[in-house]
Length: 281
Image (cartoon, rainbow, N blue to C red; front, side, top):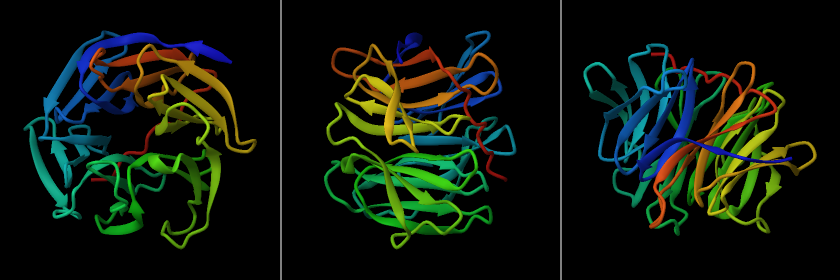
């Protein structure tokens, strides 16, 4: 099935990313602006916070006033009420990299990846911050760490390193590392656009944003096929998330071009999403 997304918020944003729905509010970041945004899906009230020079991801915690964030080089806790940051780890202070996509796993660990600034060298990493606040390196030799998600039964972790043009899966019941078994769920080599952020729905299907592809594709991980597409009136979708109740909606973030601003889009979806896990603080 092919559907068309409609405009939800006109922006303008430079690089909107990392959407997450908490109750009735959609949250996302504008990476180069270093800002965190929330928009009520009921009242359309829009709020924003200036967090840092760059802000690549923001994830909810068990304290509604504290968010786990990744900035240029840091994993930190951001306090909404005081607009302050508490740095937890700085794993790559001397590399030409920055943090990119991040998600909290169903068992409560933060998985956060970095990317090479020029998107060329395989010098980036995927890290895991455990519930005990210990940081470990999972994967090395990454170029652009991107989409992260888990199957509804928590048995598989899905992952994208964009230049590989592959959506891969790891056994989430085992430690994620370079020697772990991984399997290719879908190869985008002959598909227009570059695989970016992703989300997983309650039926276990994987929604992947195609940067420079102007659409979101829904992939069946068992059949390794695209079963649905959502077209977006913006060339650079970056990520997506799903609402969790009846009448599910897909929310899509996009990046600006010379002709179009970064914006937020929405579309109807056949299946709701999985509620995000809050990191325990």
